[in-house]
Image (cartoon, rainbow, N blue to C red):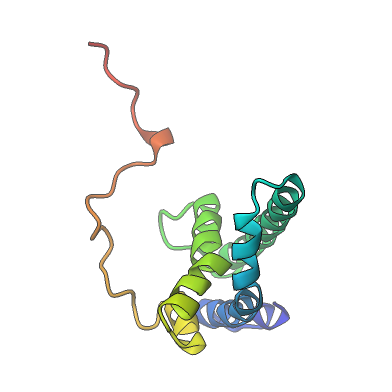
Length: 141
C-alpha cells in the first residue's frame, strides 16, 4: 500500500490500491471459501471474524486517507465506502469473477478501478431507496 500513498491523484491511488489488493485476493480467494464453509467450527469462525476485522480496519484507514487527500464522491459516506470496498474488493468477489467466470486478473483490477465504467448504470436493479436508518418511521394505522 506504500505505492498508493505516493500516488499523485485519486485515480492513480485507486489503481495502486486495486493492484495490491487484488494480488492479495488472488492468494486467499480459495482459502476464504474453505474458512467460510467451516463457519460451524468455533475456531474457524474466530479466525474469519478476526481476519474480516483486520480488513475492515485496514480499509477504514485507506478510505480515510483517500477522503482526506483526494475526497470521496459527493454523498458517499466513508462508512458506506468501507462496506462497498469490503464487498467489491474482497476475496469472494475476486473468486467469483476470476476463478468461476474466467476473468483475467488484469480485467478484475481494471473493473475494480472503474475502467471501463461498470456496464450497468446506477439503479439498474431498481429505484434507489434510502438506507433503512434514514427512512421515516412507519405511519400509525
